Image 1: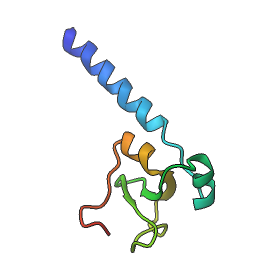
Image 2 (image 1 turned 135 degrees about the vertical axis):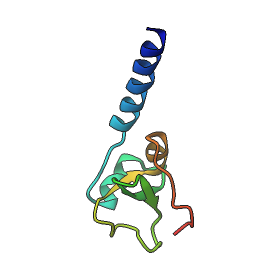
Image 3 (image 1 turned 30 degrees about the vertical axis):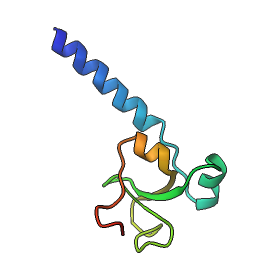
Length: 83
């Protein structure tokens, strides 16, 4: 019973983080939402973000513009090779 309760608490915290991730269709909309953060292009399937000026920025099939800090809090990460 104790393990089940712990699992429910952990699951709900991950769901809350993912829900807090605001997704935008344009870079300017995302920048308005988080003026003091870096806007990244997030591949929603892989949860890997890309920075402006990098190869995959804004061109992946399942992309949305998001704030870097919110993406990190939701479990996303930059690409391992920095591209």
